[in-house]
Amino acid sequence: MTPTHPRDVTQGSLARHIWRLTRPITISQVLFMWPDIYDALWLGKLGPHAQAAAGLTMSVRFTMVSVLMALSLGSGAVVARYVGAKDQDGANLAVLQAVILMIAASGGLGLAGTALARPLLVLAGADSATLPLAVLYARIIFAGLIAMEMVPSVGFMMTAAGAPQVLLGMTLFSTGTLLVAEPLLVSRLGVEGAALALIAANGIGMLWGMGMLTAGRAPVRLDLHHLRVDLPMMGRILRITLPAILQRGAPNLAMTYLTRLVSAYGAPTLATWVIVQRISNFALIPTMGLSRTLPAMVGQNLGAAQPDRAARSVSLTARATVLVGGTILGLLALLAPQVLALFSRNAETISTGTRAIRVLGMGYLGLALNYVFDAAQAGAGDTLSPMVINLISMWLIQVPLAYLLSRPVGMRADGIWLALAVGWIVQATLMGWRFRQGHWKLKRI
Image 1 (cartoon, rainbow, N blue to C red):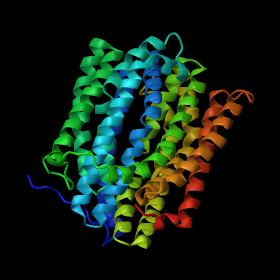
Image 2 (image 1 turned 60 degrees about the vertical axis):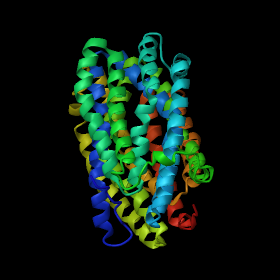
Image 3 (image 1 turned 180 degrees about the vertical axis):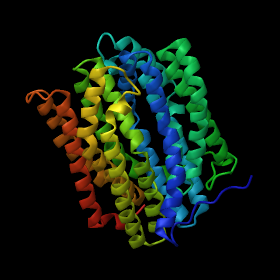
Image 4 (image 1 turned 90 degrees about the horizontal axis):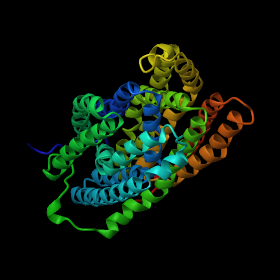
């Protein structure tokens, strides 16, 4: 098989390039997010404590893997610049160094998570009834963290290089494996089976993706014959990655704290929150697909010395996001009771979840716009500005407001939903203002 070539987005119709990149990215995101929905359906058969156990584990995991999220941003920005400048050797070297960093980071975090699963879950708010199940689930997930994280990390880096088909292939293999493995393993092993199914599925996807890169069937190659540590290239990636760790870690840590606040109202409420998150994230997949075209659109056009073209691509994507996201979230708010009934027959769960979805609606539209400006800044290699804005919106607005509304004001979980919505709207407003200043156009990598 001959290698595919990265899509050249530095000339031609912006709308056409965005649409062509969006299609495989969106399909990949459906396949990537479907396991969350599928997992929730099967865990729902085991009861609210199983849902809560998985939710707490994933909350801790997302906080810890902020490093991997940042690495995918940093490496994607560097690779996109080399691709835009038509420097194949530089792009190949950047991919190799990024993969080395990703394996080292995910392996180290996996060992730490496996060893510290119990105290981490207690900090996250696990009660005595949920903790034993959560520890079982978490130790399996962290033991297989390399498989869990290499699929999104490598996939998003390749998307920034203009090759979203690599992520599509990885997620296709992962999802296909999960569809078969989860029913079999959950029916036999319960919560442990759900975790093993996720690890096995992602492991298959990871092996396929790494095979594509090493065999030269992707636009950039993972050349193991020249396997070495290149400190200058790693330095370029890490200069973008380090502020992005705090940028990604701040909201992830905030969500862990907010999950702890939600857990104070019992396992059924926590299970409801887990379900609402998964449904809402799945509903926002089309807007995520749009935003994830921007590392390629911005990075490659800056690499080709066309900053105005990069800016126009962001403006076009933002308008499409408002239209698509607003339509989907409006329908979800209207049909919330019917959607939630697919995951639970408990009337209280459906009632609580319906209020959450409807209160969070405008906030999620703000979050979708935040993804657009965040991806644009990341494509330019500017992760410092989003980091500062994340810290402001999350820790100075969202977290304090969630505590005040839920506890002193007495709104309970409804206060947390309102605080989340306000925080995301403020964050999107600040990100849009920062982007319009245009400093990202001058960023050097």
